[in-house]
Length: 272
Image (cartoon, rainbow, N blue to C red; front, side, top):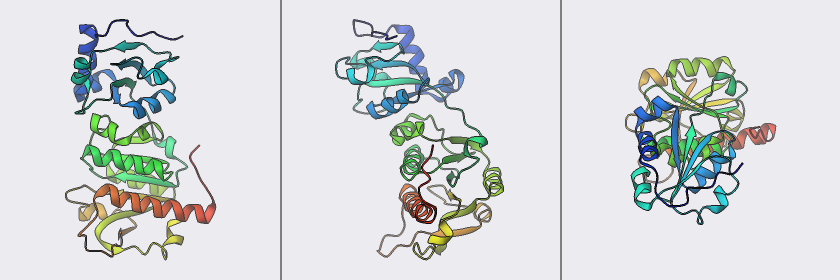
């Protein structure tokens, strides 16, 4: 069944209020829903069957390729209303109201590559790490207690749809996360500038097994007590004059090196 958008632009006041509540965490927590904004995010959300509950567009014709044939209600908003719902300066004019995802440890039980974000609080960094994890074929991401909310609009936007591609566990104490992945036979490596520089070629054998990477907070990195939880603390080697890499750049390097080593050793392990 296809739901045609309301003919005249303009959300009913009750709909506008209910969707606006989802721009705040309290509203998301109360309803178990969140907003995915932008064409790519909406495309990926629609591909994950059963997640999208409503679509809101400001130009039906512009987004016809995404909304024609969908089986969810479609609302035609004014440009002014869309600005009230958007988290960006220049909205793309399409937003999906999505059901929150639910994952548990069983979803990463056979994981070979996992990222643990330890108190990563910047929405853009968390979202970009998730996108990197998706790009390099990781089997899941864990956001520990103290990390940014996964459904923060900036986090969702920064994933560019990768949020819908893999299991993401949230609110897990770091000690529990490390204990769990170690029990699954994973080696835990912590990325920290104070660690020994990792020789990516020499470490290929070490990286070819199941690996969980701990990525620390943007501002203070990994406290000593957290670093001690890892099997090894390593630093990304740098040969230029930059003082350090930011979190998402370091994550990209570590994930690429690990995924490459794993594929050389045992072939592709693309997620099912």
